[in-house]
Each structure stands twice: as C-alpha cells, then as structure tokens.
Length: 96
Image (cartoon, rainbow, N blue to C red; front, side, top):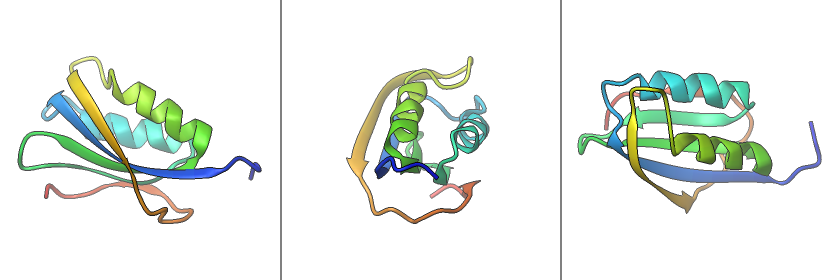
C-alpha cells in the first residue's frame, strides 16, 4: 500500500456507452488499476460508476473513461465526490 491519498468519485458517462462493452471494459480497467467500487447501466442510457482508491489511479481511470472501449462514443463524463467504500473489489451491478 502506498502513502498516496485515497479518493472516491461518482462518475456519470454519457454518449454511446451501452451495448458497446463499456461496463466490462470498466471492470477490467478499474481492477488493473487496483480500484474498488462498481459500474452499472442507467435507465437513461448513461453508465454510472463509483471509483475509489489512490488518487492517481482514480485520475487515470477518469481520463480513460473519456474514451472507453473502441466501440464507445463518449460525449461527456460528469464527476462528483463520493463516500469511499474502503478497500475491496470492483464489480458490475444491475441496471438502475
């Protein structure tokens, strides 16, 4: 574990992000960065994700979300502060 400050954010990703493997890509990328949290589709067509972990890793994940997987077309990523769920895995959740 590093001494880097932990950060937690809630991200809402808009654009063509459903039906293009965005959630699966998010799980793989977040796990590779050592983040905890979750990702899910939203009924409005967006994808929502909670990312928590070392500040630098969260920032790298948010930057990656601007592009997503090759078939995605991201039009925007809205980010707000969130409560840190603490260490743990990263999972895909059901649509809300």
